[in-house]
Amino acid sequence: MRSPSAPARGGDNVGHVSEYQYYEFQALDRPLSRAEQEHLRAISTRARITATSFVNTYNWGDLSGDPRRMVERYFDAHLYVTNWGTHQLMLRLPKQTLKLPTVQPYCLDHHVEVSTTRTHLLLDMTSDDEGGDWAEGADDSLAALIGVRDELATGDLRPLYLAWLSALAAWELEDDDEEEYQACPEPPVPAGLGELTAAQSALADFLRVDGDLLAVAAQTSPAAPKKPVRPTKKELALLIAALSPKEKDALLLRLALGPEPGLRTGLLHRLQGGAGAPAPVTGRRCAAQLLDAAHTLRAERRRRAEQERATARAQRLTALASEAESAWQQIETHIATKKTTAYDQAVTLLAELRDAYAYTGRHTDFQQRLTRLREANRRRPGLIHRLDRRDLR
Image (cartoon, rainbow, N blue to C red):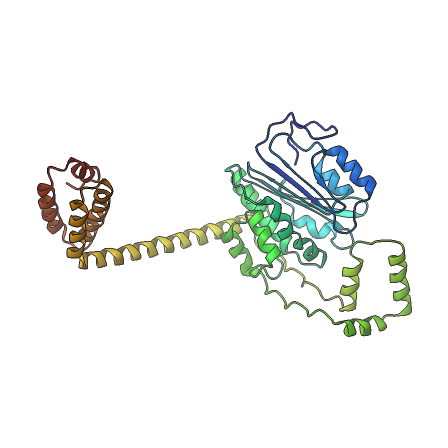
């Protein structure tokens, strides 16, 4: 996501002021050639470039290249983070591992987009929060997120649904057209939304997925199947031996033709009988129903939290009222020191004691005791001023 004011020219653009931007690209399926690294160096003279990565941080200036083009041509993953609230993750997958029709139902507005090249599918997921939700340690984020790429390649669609939920919450903030929410169908619901993997939890945090919205979505999500046990070397040998000569020849030919993204994953999937993530269930709700249910859940959670706080306060006031004499002694001890900090402590405890007396129906007793305390300390203006400021008269 380039700044609109950043011109497309060679080298880093230093004419655009930006407080913080972090760009990271990773090549996973094949290393970059020397010529490709040199081409990337022409895009940025300051980036850290290796055979598998491109990383740069900007506090002044901007990346002159187009990140989408860079992913299409060189990289399999891209992370972009700014201190004005943009979180963006792009993933490139071979077309044979993730099909365009599978992804399209999860696309929403500009927050979840998909495109294709001749050989790959490009998934673009973005969360914007102008409130400045800036995560420190952005250089660790992609390592935590990258696992969702393999999950998508093996048929686990939970990352797509999480991205859709993030987009839905953002869409609600940008548009208040109820009819549009009613007309927006829920995409297929993958299994296991109630028990995310570590990479998926990291993605939910990165895209700022609302916890209540996720809890509502998970209500119709089947339980995730148990992860298949990885076959041993001996078991793999037996499985390979069972392949027909024609299948083995085809695999060897593909291997001889050069690195093929997803070949190992596809082979293991084939050897294990094609067992993968279960098919998602058809989404039966619309966006409006999900948002309304999340609002109800959030209101109920807040009501319970307020009730718990009120209960805890009542217990605290009751306990303080039962130990009132000890509290008065502490107050007098604080005042006797004639120190300003001790005066503050005395007044804070008095305010709590007032509430405790009121809660137990003894407000008159407190007022009489307070009047005597004020009279005994009328020549201490610092204390009297503090009592007046807290309305302890």
